[in-house]
Length: 84
Image (tube, rainbow, N blue to C red):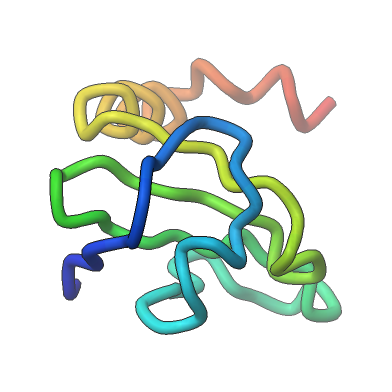
């Protein structure tokens, strides 16, 4: 995945449009009517996440370690409570 070098200060909750329109990927896209999570790897190694149906909405910014912990936890079933 390409790393994106955003302009200006990157912070949690910033408008996703300020990160630009290039570099967003839909790693978890499926048959959900276009409601997808989009992710972008930033140049400093952090990961930005946004809702695909609201590309101008807030971007959540996570460290690589935070994203790794989330994905590994989800794979281990630790997030299954979100589905019930």
